[in-house]
Every structure is written in structure tokens, then in C-alpha cells.
Image (cartoon, rainbow, N blue to C red; front, side):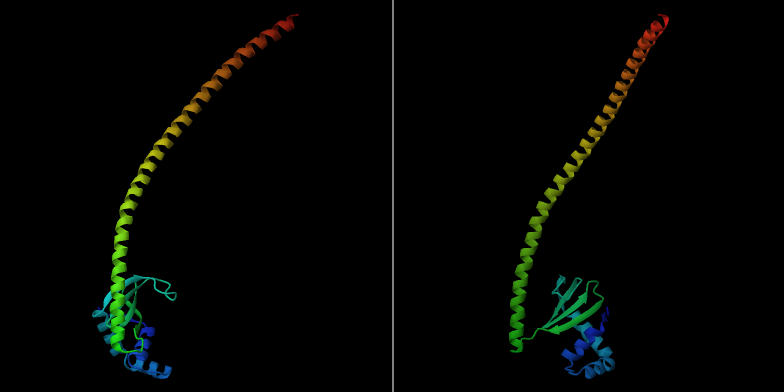
Length: 187
């Protein structure tokens, strides 16, 4: 699988691996050796290990895949189809120090990854419990809503009965009033 190598990654290769210093030399190197750059970076990826997927630092707006190849870090886009950049982990105190630092950081990362997995498992169990409670509450809410709708319908029906009773009373009152009016006309 051949990855797309961004121009930024190609220039970083020219600068950091091919030791080109000036911008003109870097750009010239990239133009002349584009195939070699792509081949070398793809080989680095093939022999690398994906150590992290997510946002890193303040520069990356989107999640990236972080690969480690020896003492080189390579950032790929999340779809793993494009190399964004690459750089060497180098403290300028010797390659052994760099390798030891990476080893110690890998140990630290492995511990933190184990802690993360443990925490995810704990949270998953709690989360599932809470999701079940939410589901039961939603079922109960639906039952209460159905009961409320039934009570509201029942109240509407009772109000109609009351209105009918009031209307019957009104008719009886009208009859009495008509009788009174009829009596008053005869006087």
C-alpha cells in the first residue's frame, strides 16, 4: 500500500533525513528525489508501529495516527492514506540516549495504556448499568405519559358530561323562566 506523501512531509524528509539546509536546496531535493522520498517513507511506515490515534499537541486540529519507526515519529491522517510529517526524536546527546528515552517512554505509555483499558472496562460496566437504568426510566416515563393521556381523555369526557348536565339544567331553567314569563303576561 503506497501512501500519499504531503509536500510538508517530503520537505521534512529532505531537511531532516537528507540534511538539506536552505529552502532552495530542500525544494530542489524534493523535486529531484520525489520517488526515493516516497519509497523511503513508505518503507518507514511498513516497519513502524502505530502507537497512538488521536489529537496531539496544539497544532493538530484533527485526530492523527502516530507511528514510531526506530527513533522517528511519523504522523498520518486518520484514514491512514496520507503522511503529514515526520521527525526524529533526538536530544543531541547520542543515539543510545535517544533509544533509551524512547524505551522508557514506551514503558510509561504501556502502563498508561493498561490503566486506560482498565478504566474503560470499569466505565463500560458502570455505563451499561446506567444505560439500563435510563432505559427502564424511559419505559416508566412512557407508561406515565400513557396514563396521563388516559387521565386527560377521561377528564375531557367528564367535562363533556358536566357540560351536558349544565345544558340540561339550563334547559330546565329556561322552561321555568318561560313559565314565569308566560304567567306574567297573563296578569
